[in-house]
Length: 101
Image (cartoon, rainbow, N blue to C red; front, side, top):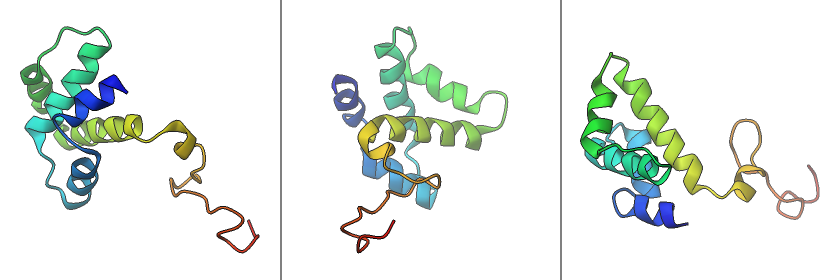
């Protein structure tokens, strides 16, 4: 939870979701949040290095999407992820679906 709290000091779940959907991702916030995670894992890296890395060697959009997906997947509890179907949609409970699965 400490790393998630540190990430959310820079970018929130909703900002990532909405930015991914509408193409308006706050890149500096994304890079800073991703650097927080990398530093938490022991890397010595600055937000500027992460930001510059997004632009290096082309394929910028794929790198941005990977960063968004990575952060979002850390923010969603594993118990919720395990209840998702293969398309990533949460499964309905038997009660919510009228007892049918």
